[in-house]
Amino acid sequence: MRAAIVWKALGPIDLRNVGRDPMMRLLVAMPFFMAGVLRWGIPMASRRLDQYMGFDLTPYYMLIASLMLPFMPMICGMVIGFLLLDQRDDRTLTALQVTPLTLGGYLAYRITLPMIVGSLTTLALLPLTGLVEIAPSTLLLATAAAAPAGPIFALFLASFARNKVQGFALAKANGVVTWPIVASYFVDYPWQFAFGLIPFYWPVKFFWMRQAGEEHAWVSLAVGLIWQGFVVWLLLKRFERVSRQ
Image (cartoon, rainbow, N blue to C red; front, side, top):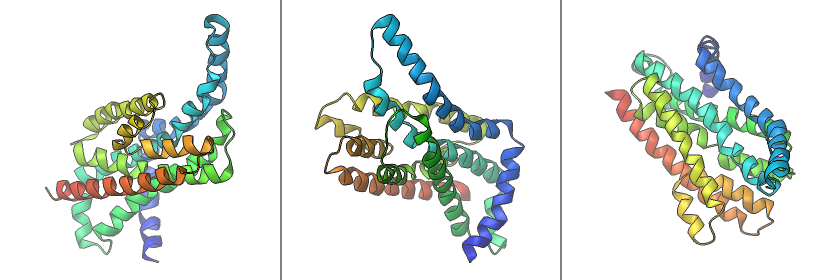
């Protein structure tokens, strides 16, 4: 009941803040734009590469599609991170101390929101890319495995950036985390697991293993959820310290 009150109180405020900020609106549109690029742009690029360079891109469709798993919740996390920066600058967190809404309830809302929105976006848009056939069970489990990327990204921005300008710079720099994941696709066992320090590697790895029909894919799912959960906890602690300053 208390959670419903939090969502009812903060949800409309977030919608208004996102709606009046051009950068936020652009971020909200980004997943739909990327899904369109994958559905129509990648096949077109594949044909051109095959025609003019004799390079077949189709064996890498699964790799390209898998990057959408962390991308969707990361975009949602970026939006929440910017909202957190705004509200930290406005001393909203300080004002919470004299309201019935506790800091714990506020942070729980901030953590679950990008997970839910990011997961729903992934479930809707990843199959629409049409690059690979995905079993419903694989889609659901891989989406759940990637969901923590949202709060990780949100808390990272809110914990390490002093304002939205720095937050935007960190968000752009953080985009490089996808490149090691791409590189890991071409690395053999056991060296591939060296990339496991990147939290977003594990849901992508789980997706690859499920698509390949490997029996032990659940190990990547479990490790990914535990590792990402630990990272969320660490970032929460840092955010709480920064918010008290």
